[in-house]
Each structure stands twice: as C-alpha cells, then as structure tokens.
Length: 193
View 1 (cartoon, one colour):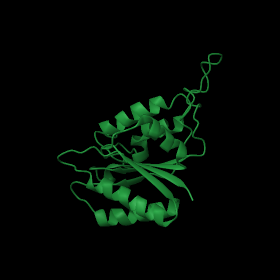
View 2: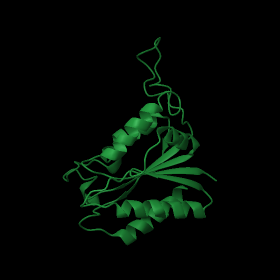
View 3: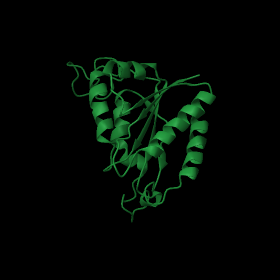
View 4: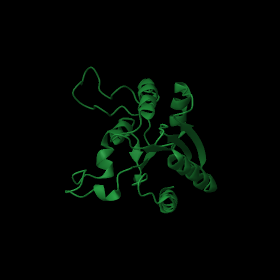
C-alpha cells in the first residue's frame, strides 16, 4: 500500500488544546493502518530534525497536513516547520531551487519540484461556521476554504505535489459537532485512500 506522512500542525493555546486535531490524526492513523498503509506522524510539539523531515517527505506517497486555521492561516509553529524544513529541501530533496535557470530567468518559476507523484491533503479545523464560506454576503465574500488555503496549496505545488480534496471541520469552538465531523472524516479518508 502507500506510505503516508501525517503532520499535526496544531499549536497549543490555553483556549484551544488541540484535542480535535489530535483526534483527527489518531483517526487517520487507525483508518489508514487498517487499510494496510504505512504511517508516520510528526507534531509541532516534537523536536524537529530537518534531515529526518526531508526523508519523511521523500518516503511519503501522500502527506496529510492536519492544522487548525488561526488568523486565516496555519499556526506559527507549522509555519516555522515549513520555513526550516522546506527551505532546506530546496537543494533537491523537495525541489531544485525555484525551477528557473540563469539562462531563462523569466520562465518555469515553481517548476523545480522533485516530489512528482506525491499527493497531499489538507485537513483543517475552523472556529468559523461553514456558512461563512461560499456566500458573497458572508465574511469570506464568497470565497471557499481552498481559496483561503491558496498559499498552502502553492507551497505544495512548488514541490510538484498533487492535491487531494480538502477536508474541513467548522465551528469547532462555539457549535462543535465532533461525532459528525469524525464520521465525515472517516468517509473522506475511505473515499480518497
């Protein structure tokens, strides 16, 4: 079967301990292992070894990025992980620079990725209700979850990774429906893996 790296990007806050993100990671590991996949998990609370993380990405057929969305983006610790690991990977482990050459500096930006064939899936949790997306008169002005996650998608495109459909839990602090979220997550994992 496949090798699947799961990255839990949760950052502990007193108002948000990360239980749902941890539960989603645990659920993914259980579901994927039951299907015969190999899994590795890294969390932002782990001590990050950059070389090991580069090897993890090269090992993986699929990378699942599990993260809460804080202030319209991933947590600072997840961003730090990306800054350290992904910058180190620009020497060939994840990409060969930005894809351009000295001879042709105006073309092929973002085409140096070396993870061709590797897929990724974003799985995110929001305080925002689902109804705040995809409606022109709501907060996100008609934008989707993937519109909000566009910078993350571009990071992974930079490595030539291909997206699987995004999964999202909504309204997790004020109107949580964890039981239904876990059922939807299981169905999502079973459909795409």
